[in-house]
Each structure stands twice: as C-alpha cells, then as structure tokens.
Length: 336
Image (cartoon, rainbow, N blue to C red; front, side, top):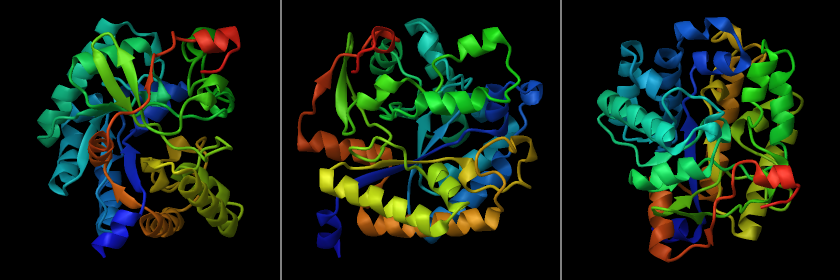
C-alpha cells in the first residue's frame, strides 16, 4: 500500500477560506462592512467531508476573520482536526499587488498574529487574494520567513473572470480602476505550471502555482467543475479526468484549489446569488465534491501544501525566476 502510494505523483489540496463579506466587498455591496460571516456553518461542513475521506489540507485564512470572536470557534476546529493553516492577508483585497513592501508586511503580520491567536498555528505559506502577486509581496514574504507562496494561477482566463465580476457589480469607475488587475492578466497564462523559486532581495521563496490543465492552461479547480456539472455531471467528471490525465502525462504535480462556496448552496448565502454555481443545492455540491475527492486521491498522493513544499525541497533545486515588475508584461504585450 505504501509502495503504491509513493508511485503516485504528489498533489496538494488547499481551501481559500473567503468569507461572505469578502465576496460582497469585491462585488461592491455596501453591507460587507458589517462583516457578515458563514464560517461557523461552513467550516464544519467542509471538515466533515474531509474527515470522511481521511484527507488533510491547507486552509488559507483571512486575518480579519480570525480577529473576530464570532469566527474563532470554527477556526479552532480546523487546527483541532489536524489541518494546516496559511495566510490569506488581513483585509482580503485582491488589488494587493499595488501595495508597497511595508504595507504588504503589515498585512502579513496582522493576519499571522490573528490566525495564530485563533488557531494556535503560525502560517508558513501565503496566497494572495484574487491571485494577486508582486515583487513587493514576494520580498516581504521572504523577509518574514515564509516558506512558500501560492498566488500564481497560470491561466489566460483571468481577464474573463474579471469582466464577469465587473458585469452587474455595484462599482464606480474608481473602484473598477482599483480592481483593474483582479484575477491577473493574459501574461499569467505563460508562467510555469510546475513549482519554482522566486529570487527576491532577501533570498529565494518557493512558488507553488494553483494548477491549470497542462498545455491548455485552463482552470480545473472545484468551482469550475461544479459550474460544468450544472449542465452535465458526466461532462464535468470527464473534464476532471482529462485534467488529471494531462497532469500525469506532463509530470505536473497538481495544487488543487477549493472554496467554501463549493460546499454551500443557494439557501446558505442568498447574498451571493451572482456567484457561478450558487443556484445549486448544497447536497448536490457535496455529492460531487465527494466524487472529486475520491478520484483525486486515487490518482495522486494528496497532502497539505506545507508537506508538498517539504517534498519539493528534499528533491533538490528548482528553476529560479526574477519577479517581473507589476503590469510590465501586460503593458509591453510580452509574456513571462
């Protein structure tokens, strides 16, 4: 059994614990400032499914949620169940790439302190909200001792996702300009699919990209699969199996992404009716998520991101890249 498991490619599984208010904030809904939360209801649902599949993952937690007393019981459950925690910023602003290094460092510090206070665990990995990343963010992460970043989505579809969010959102022109880099640029689709090291002024930090389908560079995380399943579950499962097969063929160790909305139905968060897949009942989502986890574990040796990082380091050196200046690739029409 152990030998068979070692023959599989390693894969990592993580969940961005974006809360109700954070989706409302990006969408421009005024009531986000009341910090409405679904974490006390959502976290136990996710933990129950993971426990039934005996699977440990990494939860990327937003500091503002960890700092609020009403969420702390739910966040403690994550640590008590043996899962890993990561830093998902304090204020969950997907335009963090516009921050300077000092501002990024303050976000990271405040979030880490709140997360450790709530869970008893200190995060060693980071994911930028909305896949935001910049040289300043990477430099701050390395200077603060983080082991890995997981903010890159190597897909050409980021601008389409941004247009979808802007469509119908309650945003003025200035807010749209602030969110102009939301979900990245076409140039992101030409970044490496496999983990690599960024070179920063403070040393190297590993990047573990959120996986897209090799060659085609289109996402296949659970939100996309669920959206496809609305039209045909057979089609969604075939798309998933194709993605797994391409990863094995190209020797890409997938880092797969989950969100709370993958486990919640329309009745759980009516404020998020605008989000793809939120017209599906919770039971249908959970049934599909169970099928995904079974297939993912059958195809790969699935671990939290910290363990994935450790295994990669044990194997030796990785490709080293210099972070491109913010927007430089997009502005010049070149691909990094």
